[in-house]
Image 1 (tube, rainbow, N blue to C red):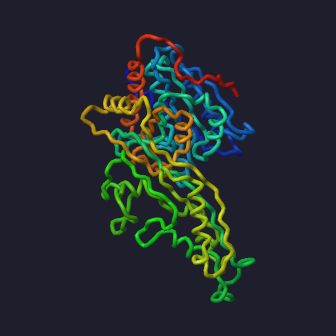
Image 2 (tube, helix red, strand yellow):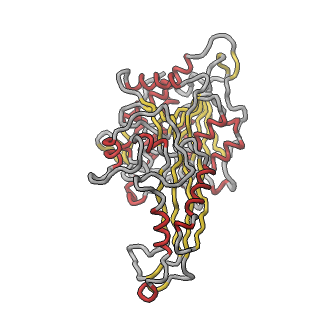
Image 3 (cartoon, one colour):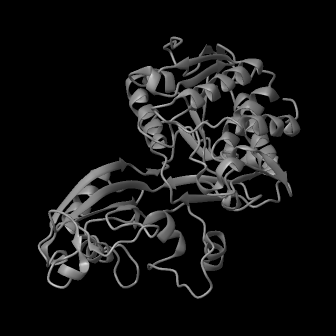
Length: 465
């Protein structure tokens, strides 16, 4: 195994950031350009690479980059490894044009996707280069182009399970709980979302003429939304569960206040430990709103119809369909609607959580050893939960029930993902790439001598799109 060439990786990441790979079904040119760039990088590193069409019609979808390399025949017991990352990113938002102009400052690289998740793509590229395209284990690399929009790859995996068979799966779309502290994520909350629409009028009317007896739809909606949390701030929807987590670190209040930027006099909400509130219990918020005029163009009127998208993070073991049913029943109860407004609740998002089991064989200790080799034996290691959602993780585990799924990456709190300015620590990129390469090296050395047979490799050869 060669040393990791971090300088080269950083230059590649700088170039990669300039690709505006926001998935848009009406204009897939930018993501397809990024996919071709991924193909070029992995091909140059020694992999056999294809692009696969994962949606219909293909012109409206981002291609899946699928690479294979490694020995065809290996000693019995040698695990097959699948590496995942995604090359699409979220919109630049208020960051504007600067989002696509990479900048190095104080040991960090700034740009949209620098961390989420082009750093994951670079990890896999750097790992492949460390073995000069000849890793010691059968290897598949999967790079997705629609992760931020969700759904399409999951359907493709269900239809082509053989392409995703592996004994060890590395999902490089998470990160360390703190900069420089190697971490494996062992639980993820799921998420559901509904659009709650409230109507009171056939059309909007003047608030001065009709205000008083005539109800405003937005005000009726606000009463419903306020009831979603109880006085402590816990979710007040009956029927939701909490998942006991045995592999989760202790989180101090000062840590979460600093990482989230909570204002000094603002209290945290909810009950139980901070870790439980972040990783094991449901949380709720409004992620979209329509109805009243915007502040840029206020009007003296009563709103006829108002809609809120309510996002509910659910415990790792909560069934999404049960959570949607509970949320709908809660929002439709008459006690929240004393004005008898028209109320409709429509499901728009449903994704399960994830809870790591105890696979056999268990490669978690091997991953810990690899991380210690990269960060130093004296550096503390942690298992942690994650409040976010990666639906693909659950599906990959279901597809490979005996596999060890390792959720990791370069995304620590300072990365500011999905916000601005997003960045990645260059030291973290180098060390996490080294950790991944060390993992493959250790897995290759862990093979049993004797019988030779093909590993648990994908058996269906994908066709080029």
